[in-house]
Length: 111
Image (cartoon, rainbow, N blue to C red; front, side):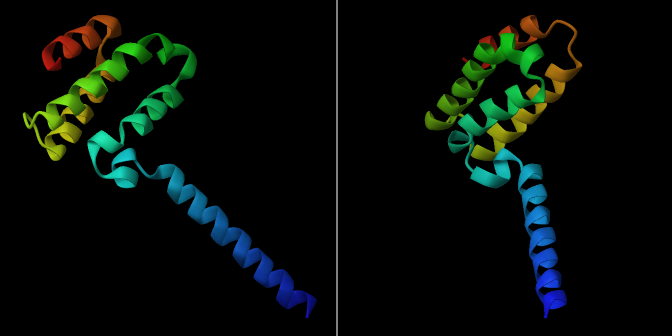
């Protein structure tokens, strides 16, 4: 009887760990779907990448997110386009040498 309870406990434990790992890997897009609803998730994920290094870029990043959301509200772009634009911005941001200048140019483009 103890073996059955132990086995059930281990199964539940491992299943819970697997669900938690899956949730950690989910993207903001998978969790929220709509870009405008995912803004706060994207803000948090941006800071989680490297809190000390990216803290100085937080304000500009958040303004870019708001600018993209405003473009959706104004029907200039749709939800799919916003996700694609944001993904491209983040890829280019990671590659850029002067991150401040890059973010400011993106903000100027979409604001």
